[in-house]
Structure formats: C-alpha cells, structure tokens
Amino acid sequence: MDEFFNTGLTHQQFLDEYWQKKPLLIRQAFKGFKSPISPDDLAGLACEPEIESRLIEEKGTNGSWQISHGPFSDEVFNRLPETHWTVLVQDVDKHLPELQYLLDPFRFIPDWRRDDLMVSYAPEHGTVGPHTDGYDVFLLQAMGTRNWKFTDHPVHNSEQIEGIDVQILAEFFPDQDWDLEPGDMLYLPPYVAHHGVAKNDCMTFSIGFRAPSQTDLLDAVISNLLEKELATGRYNDASLITSAHPHQIDQAAIDRLKQLLHMTIDQAAPILADALGRYVSETKSSLTALAEETWSDLLTVSELNKEFEEGANLQRSLYHRFAWHIDGSRGTLFMAGEPYLFDEKDFDLLPLLAENSVITLADWQRIKTSPQSANVLCQLISEGGFYWAD
Image (tube, rainbow, N blue to C red; front, side, top):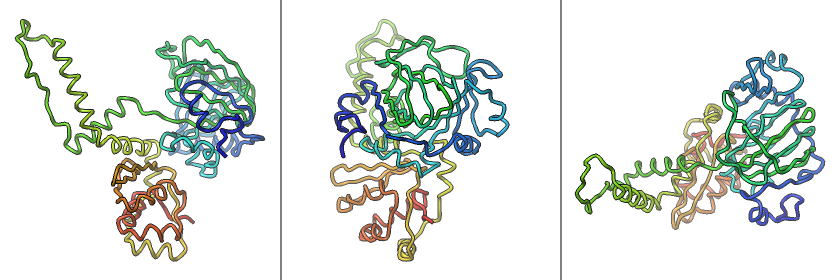
C-alpha cells in the first residue's frame, strides 16, 4: 500500500507537501506500539566500547548541560539523579538487526540518504535542550510521554548558548506544542527548531536522514578529479590589462576565477555519480572497527560456489553502506566508498547485491552466470560487505 502511515497521504504526496518543507505530526503512526527494547537494553549498548553513545546532563556535577561520551560503566548510571538527563545511542538499527523492521516504512526514501536509528532514554524532565539539526528526522515515541515544542519553519543563523558542551539555542520561540504517546511520530525538516522534554520515563526512536554539505560534496568531487587526472587546466588571464597596483586582486581576476570554477564543474559532470556514490557509501568512522570484524580472505568463485551448494547463505553487513547507479552502458555498485563496475547485461544484479539482506543459492545461480559479477561478490565478501549466516 502506498499510504504514508495513516495520514491519508500517498508517499509521493508526503514528499511533495512536507519533505524538507514543513513539520507533520502523525498520531499512532505505529498503532499500539510497544518498544522492542527496554531502557536497560539501551544502557547495555551504551556500555559497549565500540558503540557510539552520549550522556547529556542538564544539571551535571561539573555545570549545566554537561555532555559525556561512552562507553559508560554501571557506576555512571548508578550516580545519576532521578531527573534531568538523557542517554543517546547511535546506529541501534545496526547493532540490533531485529529492529530493521522499523525502517521498512521509510524505504520510499533512498536508503543511501538514511543515517541511522538513534534511540534515547530520559527520565522526567530529561532533554537535550532546544536546538536545530541539519537533517530530516522522524521522531517516534516508543515509551512514556514526551512534550515537543517546535517551530513551523527552519531557523538559520541562530544564536547559541556559549560556554557549554552542547549546541543549545539562546532563544527559542515555538509555534506548536504537542505531547506524544507511544506510537505517535513527528516529522521535522532540516533546521526546524525543536525541544523535547520527557514528562516521565520515556524512550524516543529517531530515524535520521543525512544530507551532505556543499563542502563535503566538493571535497568528494575534487578527490575524484585528482584521481582521474581531470580538470588540469590552469587560471588564464589572456585578457589581462595593465595594473596601477601590482599587489591588487581586481574584480576581473575574481570573475576569471568564477569562470574557471564553472568550467571545472562542467568537466566534473561525467564523474559526479561516481563521487556521490563513493561518498554516501563510505563507512561511518564510528562503525569502522565493527565493519572490519567481518573482513575475510578472498574466496575463489569455486570456493564460493561450494559454500552455497552446501546450504550456506550470505548475510549483508549492516555496518557497510551500499548504493548503485546506472549511466548508459555502465553500472556501478558502491560499497564502503569503493566502486565495482558491471556490464549492461548484468544491470539486474545491482539491486540484488546492493539491497538484498540475504543472498541465497537461488540468487547465486543468477550471479554466477556472469563471471565478472561472481568475482565482484567475492571481493565484497572479503571486504566484509557480506558474511556467512549461521
């Protein structure tokens, strides 16, 4: 069904009317929802050394709005007061694969845009303060009640409180004020100011969609240009006129620079998809160590075939990012920032390898008809993108 939860909107109508435009409150988006994890489960994750977590204390022992980074110990949780703190854990969807089902309703938005499922727990009055985020987020209430205040429009260049560890708005003037119960969900576009406060013991699931910054994308494009030895032209001033001030950079020089940069972007057009694919498929730095745990020796196609015929299945690693693109007669699969090329006859294998959570013997029968694709799968396994399921 193409309905966006129980809003009466289709997926496309939601994208047209709300996505990156205005907030949307959805009552009982997940009807009768009960959190699949407990606060103790979340605290356990926050104690793991390879899992990214934070603790924000509005009234910390070292001052207001004290932030600490995990891993945490039992002693840390035992010393916390009864109110006014929040613990947050990133990438819970990857650490607990059984929570992947929560992401399925959002797959009409490209997966390469999604960052993670972050889970927070807070006792009464727990909050991270009024703030803005540079990404789209769906805030699903999982346990307890949280009050949300937020603006109707993005807030840019806002002043922040100085001298504290977290970025909190110095002034906050909300337009809307709602209490969310389990199953309720709030969508917020980038830079909409918001402030959530726990009214009792509560958990919130945040499904965030990242958007690369201009400088990040430029850096990715430049890296590809350098690698492929493109855009090697130099600054040109054949129309130079005499200057009365030899150290002055005049407006004509700036105009020539603009023209050169425009030419550079034009020359980069053939590699833009490659640059974007590499960038969005890079492994998050906080997940690198976990991603490397699934690395293995490079198998031959014969060895791979034997594993499948003996009944083994391949599981896709959740710690790796995948994306794919087709440009004319060339297809590219991206994983962990690396491109893998496919011929036109094998384009149908791109979504299979990039999107299937499991690769079975039946899938392998399709893949191995293409020696090139079979070898790519061998490489993906050695780089940890797939591992043998128990």
